[in-house]
Image (cartoon, helix red, strand yellow):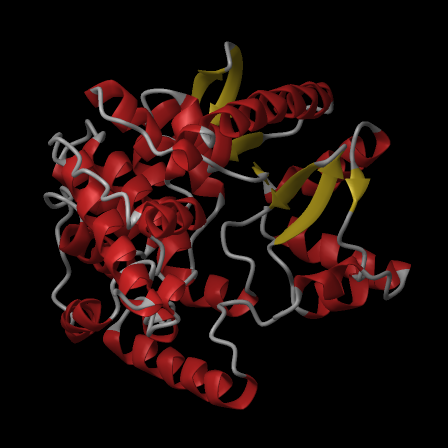
Length: 375
C-alpha cells in the first residue's frame, strides 16, 4: 500500500513529467487511476490545471474530471477581467494617462494558444510615475475603490504599487515593477524605459498597450525569481515568453544590461531549463551565484511546497545583480526565516495590514510626491 506522502511525491513528479512532455510537443503521460486524486490536487494547486486539460483534449487523451472542470472558470474569469480592463482603459485614456497592462490577461492572450489555458487572479496595471496620481484619482472617481488604505505604511515603505478593486476584481496599480524600495535601488531599473519599448496589441479585440516581448520575458523572470522561483507555472510562462522572442540575441542581451537584470534572468532561464524542455535564447552571465542556483535546483524542484519540502525560496529570491549582493540578501532572507518563520519576499508578511485605514493626508501626499519624483 502506497503511503500518502509517497503518493503526493509521485503526483508532483508526474506533473513535472507532464509539463516537460508538453513543452517538447510530446504525448502527455497517462495518469494512473490510483494517482489521479493527488495528481489533480497538485495540478490545480500549481495553477496548471487548465493548460494540461487543454493539451490532453488536443491530444485526444482522457482528461481527469477535476482538470476538465477547471477550464470553464478560467475562461469566465478571463472574460470578466477583459470587461474590467476595458473600463480601466476608458478611464485612463480619457484622463490622458500613460499606462499599460502586463501579466494576467496580456500573458494569457499573447503567449497561450487559448486564453482559457492560463489561470490568473487579478489585473496588473503599470502607470507612468509622472501620471500616477492623475491615473489613481481618475480610477477612484470612476469605477474603482481603494483597498490599500494604510498610508502610513505605504509611505514608510515607499511601496511600488497599491491595490484597488473594481467590483470583485482586484487591480494591482503599479508605478514600478518592484514594490520594495530596496529592490528598486539594487536593480536601478528605469521604469520609464518600459514605456519607450511598449507596444499596442489587442486583448479581447480591444486595443491595449502592453510590454513588448523582451520586457515581458524579463518581467516574468524577475517576478518569478524575486517571488521565490518555486512554482512551475512561472517557469512555463517564462519558457513560452523566451521561446516566442523574435528579437536577436544581441537585442535581448542589450535590454537585460539596460535593465540591470542579467543575473536574475540567467537564474530563471537556468532553472526553467532544468525542469522543462530546452533552453531559453539567453546569454548566461558568468557568476558564481548562477552556479550555486544550479546546484540548488537539484534539491528544490518546483511545487515542493505541495510536499512541505524544501523549496529554495530564500535562496532564489535573494538573487540580485551580482554574486556579492545576492549572497548578502540571502543572509538577510535566512535571518528573517529563522526569526519569523517566513521566507516570503515581501517585508509585509500579512498584506491585509495595508488594507486597514492608517496614516494621514500628509503620508499620502508624501508617497504620491515620491512616486512623481521618478517620472
